[in-house]
Image (cartoon, rainbow, N blue to C red):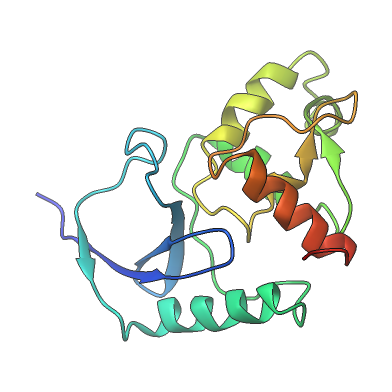
Length: 164
């Protein structure tokens, strides 16, 4: 049986977020009411003073305050090789810009893999920091988002500089 992972719940402008670490790296940022099957994890243990979780909370606060454009906490993605490739591609989408599922699929040399990219994007365990909110439909429409479309629009507006 695996050990519970340290976690910390924080309030944010997009709702309550649960930060999860393993060792010295962040493994998840979960949304309030997140489906446990979306990001399968072992049990969680409350660890409000865990250094990685405290640093993640500090950087997220700066991001939501408009004072941070990039994160530098250590990340440890849990997923298949393809999922990890998609999530790594998310990290390359510049702040304030968007990409599409098709563009990411082509960048990964999977030109017909837009749906697979969408499925991997939907299972991104480290929302906001691995900016799945920056992925939109090829027609420019906002598409599914674990935190809900209102949260996705809020994050995009924050990065455009026209939030609230």
